[in-house]
Image (cartoon, rainbow, N blue to C red; front, side, top):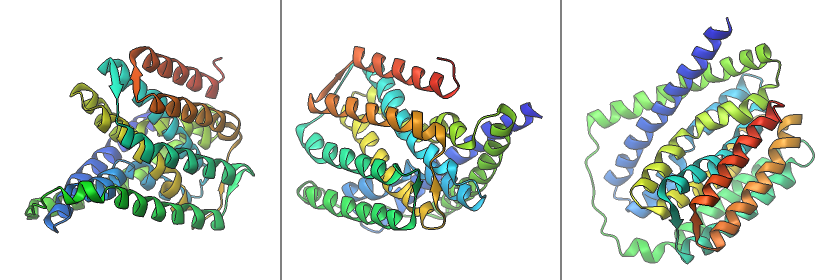
Amino acid sequence: MTIFWIGLFILSLMVLVRGADWFLIASEKFGLSKGLSKFVVGILIVGIGTSLPELASSLVAVFADAPEIVAGNVVGSNIANILFILGLSAVIAGKLTTSKYLIDLDIPLLVSTTALFLVSAWDGVITFPEAILLLGSFVFYVMYTLKEGQGKEKDESVVKTKFTKQDTILMIAGLLGLIFGSKYLVESVIKLSELFGVSAGAFSLAAVAIGTSLPELTVSVKAALQGKSEVAIGNIFGSNIFNILVVTGIPALFARLPIDVTTFSIGLPFLIIATILFTISGISQRMYIWEGAMYLMIYVFFIGKIFNLF
């Protein structure tokens, strides 16, 4: 029985991530076909698209009466994005560098949104008014980012692409993958947490979080291999901000989101540590291989703490 649920977890995760990938590709092409600039598409579609697995699985969790999965998913994904994905990218690239413009724009936003989430989660639950605050902050984030990028956007020539029947099929297939992958992922998480004797939130903090972060892993590692440090780092900024504001905010409109004991006592402290380390690396505008290795070791320690290995 355990092997069956592990197999279903892996399969549903693969379907979820692949569905998100297909939906993202089709959505990006749809945006360009409507005359949107590459900058706007990058901010609104690509930035949001890489977090679709987290959003889809979190919404399904709420309607499956397992709302504790949401906070574990968000906190675990953000920790994985920084410590695992960015750490691995730095090790692969040898050194990641970024511009002062990106740091000045995104670090204050990341720190402030993380602080907002911590304040909201401090009483052990995310409520409807806090959901409104988080989603309102996301609207501000999008408007601020687009305003800051207006100069860059004007320099781009808008080239329309054709949105074909194949693209429509790809978008529908991606959406179905998101729906069914999320449904069976949440179902398998609930069963596996019972079999392993841990809370669904704790299981989400580790296994679901790293699984739903695979799109970010693909984007950042590929960018690191190509020497595109800004893409690797910018991808993490955008994903973490979206996770906090939207992946938490939308599900909290439908139900109160409890923060389980493991997420509160282990996840939140490690989220603070990861954000501080990311901020320090960002201010220096470079991240060396030894920093990446340190990030990875801290992430291993984090996983060990969840399952009481340390």
